[in-house]
Amino acid sequence: MLLDGNAIGGLLMEVFGTEMTDAQATCATCGAVGPVADTAVYVRGPGTVVRCRNCSSMLMVISSIRGRNCVDLSGMAVLEPRPSQ
Amino acid sequence: MAGTAVRGRLSWQVAAVAAVTQETDSVRTIALNLPDWPGHRAGQHLDVRLTAEDGYSAERSYSIASADGEPASITVERLDDGEVSPYLTEELRAGDQLEVRGPIGNWFTWGPHDGGPLLLIAGGSGVVPLRAILRHRDRSGSKIPARLLYSSRTLPDVIYRHELDQYGGSAEVRYTLTRSQPPGWGGFSGRVDDAMLGRIAWPASQRPLAFICGPTPFVETVAELLVTRGYPASRVKTERFGGA
Image 1: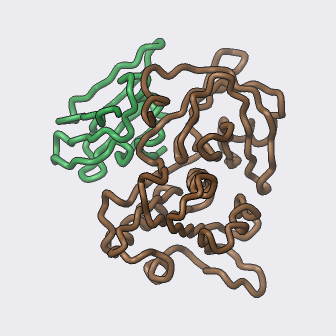
Image 2 (image 1 turned 135 degrees about the horizontal axis):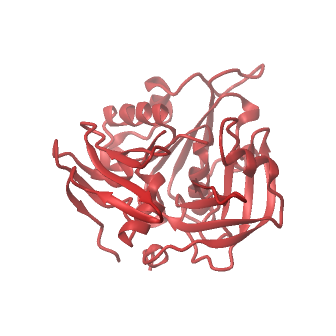
Image 3 (image 1 turned 90 degrees about the vertical axis):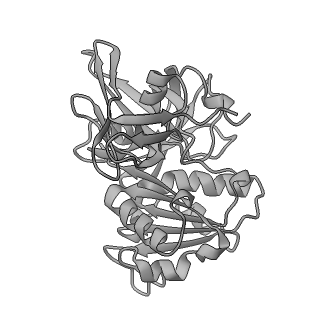
């Protein structure tokens, strides 16, 4: 099912320990920059797949195995949370 | 202060259902009693987790329907092939318990300090976070001009109609009905297109702030039309949903 980064705000907070929907993501493939909220997110598969809105490359994959989250960030050049106030 | 509520660890807590309100044939609002709720901002989400007796569990993210300072509530549409929404919209009763975590999300949120004028565009149950934004604007006494364009299949499918119609002149609320219109219908008909936006969207020169929420194709279409009209992409906030 295709959603966007808003839908996985809770999962990302669990993984990164901070609010991530307004973090800026830079695609390692095409260089597009935008908020995590705007990425294309596929859920209900074996893992959660986050793709670039511009070139559809994989930015991030999160698989939950026996209560642990395995995170593959190799498609992301930069992932920068907004400084907290 | 705004950031403190969402920082740090997010933990599941047990919420009691305070009340259930039928909004339309397939949509219900579920008011939650959350003893450990740090407060939320208009547009944020919460996650709901249901666990079956055999241990199988399913999580879903729902937009919070209530304004800042109000108890958290969610509005859920029943999707017939859904795993979670049929339970929430048909089985759940006041007094029942749910596992909840939140509030979640800083991106698709609005407060008076974010300014406007506000252009809110909803497709179906995408109206939920936009209702929270309008309610918060109203309750905070903000005079920032706001318009809501709400695309619905039919008039009986419009969620919160009574409340939205009460804004009168203080916020402009317009509906477009895509499937059928009642006799004498004076609102818009058909899908949101450039001509419709030409009649309701603030000119780009006024530096409007747009929030679009609805099914993915709806959001993509409307966001593209607004950017073509000169809205900077950074002033067009989007939230797409699937369902189930």
